[in-house]
Length: 178
Image (cartoon, rainbow, N blue to C red; front, top):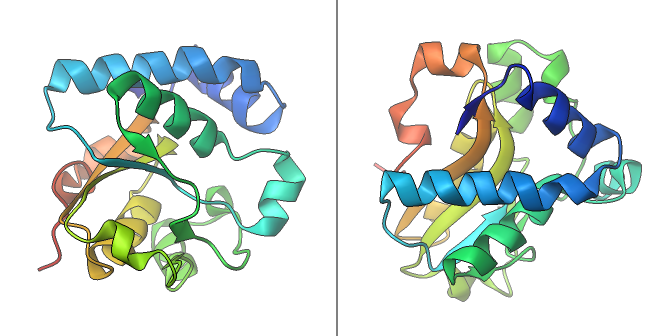
């Protein structure tokens, strides 16, 4: 995992906002290497943080899915983009402060009820490009755990200084519903 600073901030911004999907392979390889170095338990499912239909149309692709499917292939896991859903658009997280980010994401995610059984007892890796406050990861992991996942690990390419200062331990490994 990298600090969200030069050169990673520019690479990730190009990947995410400038249509540079070809950067996915390099970023996924770095994410996979960090996972191997951490010696984390293997995930049976690798899921991207989903985008709403509006945001997907705006970007043309889900950068988290581009990472997740590549990391899953490298790790021998199954990647799925149809289990965790974001049924409606919410405000851009980058435009919000910490409290507003958390409020913005309440009820933003859901598990497809037709596929819920696929999560039962599974260790899930939730993949995203950047973690800032951990609000997205926290909310998405909570939804997955309520749907029956045994554990949720969050794999991100980069973390901002804001997130590291708060050191949200539960955002990173074994997010179990308490």
